[in-house]
Image (tube, rainbow, N blue to C red; front, side, top):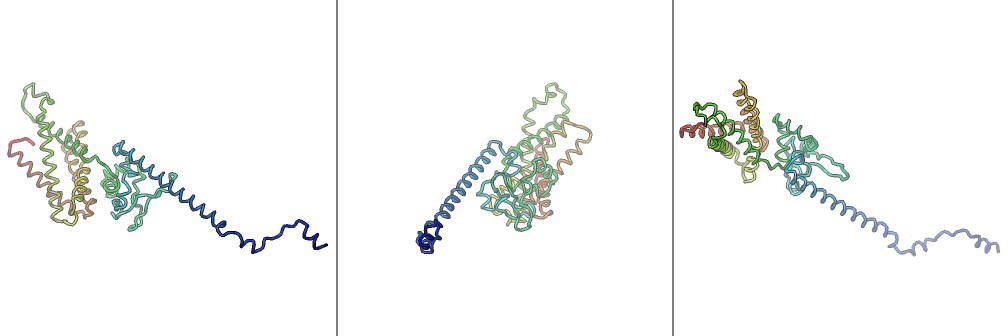
Length: 314
């Protein structure tokens, strides 16, 4: 009786090993399998969100025409360029697969170069004004950032605008040196033909200057200019480095006794910018770009002498 009453006390019995073993094996593994499916769904949704965010950044960059995003480099270049190693380290000029890594929720981390163990491109978090100041100071890091790690499509527009500035300066000097006192000739805007002629001469001179540079570099470093893309990249770098000609307009507007000296300084600044662009693009030393520029100046002066023999005022 005591044994029977002890069995009816209501105390819970401990489950035996046989009862535990009798449970199907699939019941314990079902929660991890379910969590794995949820993890895959979360990864898929995060990838889709990243793709949509990248598409929005691309469309925003196209609408703005290469504004702040174009200078900072955030979301401008596509992932295909990163896979091809299109990015460059601004310190050692080594190839990089990415400029930064997006950890979502606004968390970004700048990539580290595997060669020099420095940030691949620190300028992606800099203000565009700071980047422009460093470019004016002819820093190689700023040139690499603009040429390799951003996508700026203003080469043609900048070139045309710089040629217009130079043509206007020459046209103005031609009108000042004219000795004709005819009242009709005092109206400068009536002499459109002279302005167009100066624009054509300036275009031919700059073309001959670039041709001289290309010939010299192709002759001395043929391994650097093997493909068409190499020539296009060098041409874009040279066109962008002529931005110093924009200073011609202020020098003409605020004319004073030192204007010829200012124009000479602007010419020297443009040549220094061209040298730095060649050096950064082809990863050369400091002497070879200046040798190419010297040969380009010789060819440009030859074109000027040809126009003078024809009888045109240059």
